[in-house]
Image (cartoon, rainbow, N blue to C red; front, side, top):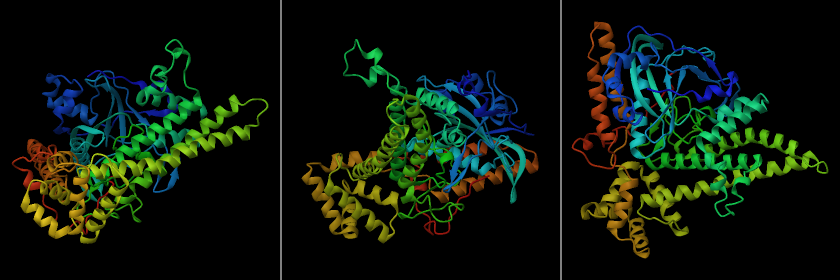
Length: 529
């Protein structure tokens, strides 16, 4: 395991140097072989479960690790907190995957840091398992996401109202740079650090911005080397690309019925990956206002609000970048032009990009739903078709995943087609007429829909059942001082085998397709801290 530590080079103001807490009895509960192989972790190390437990708990750190807790701010449910940071996480460093892409390796639930505030820095077993299972499910569903390398039981009980077994999860992410990372320095007026963070983020996630050969593909090749983008151009391009990442992410959430539950700016990764799975949930019965998070009292982050919140979060990133743009404008201002004029122009540039979010999101949103209906190119008349279907699903309280799966199968199953004609009436005929008008055959539509509409999702009641079973096993093991930990991995891996093949019917797929009897009417998720 070769570690790099590029974030440390930014300076001490970006983090706290701190080691993970030691735990009494680390036990490897889950290990992600596929992800480990992608990170080129040797078979010898993968087979050494005792050493992996030490690494995954923080009791022992691999060579080359420089453990740090990152500093950041954040808007939490609309309220700004300037001092957040990693209160229960330790960034060990970065590893290169087989494609040469730099990936952060972070322990979560690994003890207190200077950012813990009143928290204990620990993680209970259930939230650690939830993040592992949900992130793997999202990855298989084709959603940009961080992933988990391991879950290690710590052998200790932590207080969450009741005594719960503790765990540490190892998270692998494109990076842990958040909107809140930019807010941290913007709030302090620290232009130098804000500039350094921008440069680092562009180099890591959007190198094409500074690649003049890509920016000037049509230019005279002899002039390319002299055509570097200005700082203002870099900042505006960065914002546009960050917005595009968020739109892609959120429309993919909506495609599968995922509700993040806590879309604070400190949980919004610049990389465009899903990060922080605390109170997340999956929507069963279609409801635009579906919200299960116990801490989202007013439904701010409900299913149908996620697109708008994405724009709100990007506006907060824009506020940070405006600080840099204004600083750039002041430095570059012509002596004959007042600073106010330059600042007004930069504000207009930023506002224009943020305002474009709505049209960009709507285009991506309807293109996504069009594919769920077998239509590759979206037109104005198709928007009505989509909206009418969602309205029917809302009114009739239909299951989101099952409905789109049935629509997909109805194209080759006359029994299902007859049932849906009876259920949807005129809408189904309009859909068929639309496909005919576009010269899209049923097999062609079904092939496209099969890639967008999963057969199975990680349903809330299945996740909770698994978490309860695993928690009971680990608690019994702790109380009896025995080790049946492989049972935990067997339980979870049986589930993951199905969930990680969401577009292919396996022998056990049918066991995880049914909707809950109460339609998640009283279901709630919790943050886990």
